[in-house]
Image 1: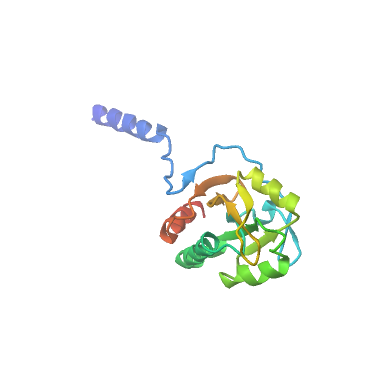
Image 2: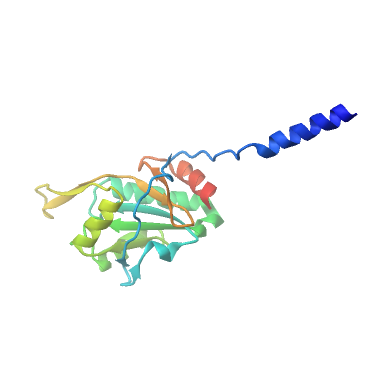
Length: 191
């Protein structure tokens, strides 16, 4: 009987001393990367916004532009689908679109474009210098390219999403090609 109690107590100690298992994500876990996430940009209602405004929520940060012919609207549709998959949990997530084209993406343009995907989504803009600074902080490549169109240019840019946890720390980077089901799965783990 003493042997059984001894073995049982050793087993309990071994289980109690194990490290908690790390959560696995579909997106790339970049939580150990130090990144300056401070910014002050204005939303489409003219209010100054910072990342601190969304503390307590999981933030999906996406850089794009409203005249984008493919990646940006497709990603926004995928985010809309992701929010639908989250159902009641969607209120714990804030999607934030930061324009890379502040010259054309005025507050009025963003106010029409962003809510067309989801009323809870927020669009941010600022001066070109402000946008360049924030894009640089998040390692977002962007460059105006003359495309011969009526608008005169498009913007080549890196695509992908940053997922920021409830404490305001960057946790994941997701490809813009992630399926809504995959995004919803990772977001649920952080909610």
